[in-house]
Image 1 (tube, one colour):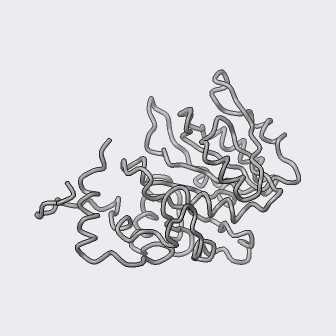
Image 2: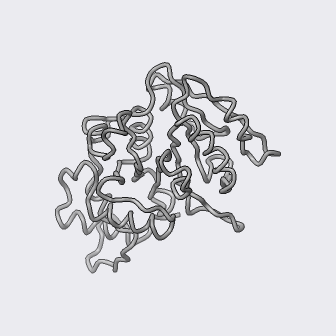
Image 3: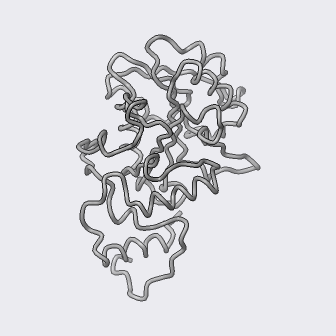
Amino acid sequence: MDTPREIMDAAWDALERGYTKYAPAAGYPELRNALAKKLRDYNQIDLDPETQILITQGSTEALYLAVNALLDPGEEAIIPAPYYPPYDSLIKASGATPRYVGATEDEGWLPAPEAIEKAVNKRTRALLINTPNNPTGTVYPRKYLEDIGRTAVDHDLPILSDEAYEALVFDGAEHVSPMSIPSMRDNAIGLFSFSKTFAMTGEARLPLWPRGIHQESRHHPQPRAGPRQFSHPDRRPAGPPRVGQVFRPDRPRTGRKKKNPCG
């Protein structure tokens, strides 16, 4: 799929309007406000854009920040398998260990909640899930999320919920975000992406903090620039790109009158 024309037009317009310098580390307020509206209307998640939404540059940075804020060397994160391969390297790069809980096609690629519960030990610090799932395409049902969420809540584990494919559901399936389930909200960290929904692969993913991903989150719940101010995973800049933040999914744009020399 090609990136929609209104997104390309908005990017070009942003360059013409001077969006070429450093952007705010947490992302433009206008974008965070627009995303708060999207989350409220589409996902049934009510968040404060000033304190609970942070824009990051691409999925690698969002996952990198979350993993490094939550996991210390020697600790573990539980991952249902099959899984998105970069999870493995991101967790290992932090000095932590991924602990996989597998499932078969006959099980609908959904590891039994009891198996996830059994995988928890004194070193477990997080549960990382991906729904809709890459590579299986499995969409986690609400009841299943509630079941595995109970384990996370009982053991006070943050749930890293990668929801990059939220718009790509078929055959009557319904995407449910853990953050929309009241019993899971305080434990969930949502990772949402523009790249799949708007066919702009690798552009931007945003983590959402109901309580913050800082390990000291109970004392400092606001997602400020701290954990990412000087982080450079894969040599990425410390803040999100200005041009990439200008397109607002809640505001259709008309085409430009000028010809785009980039095609």
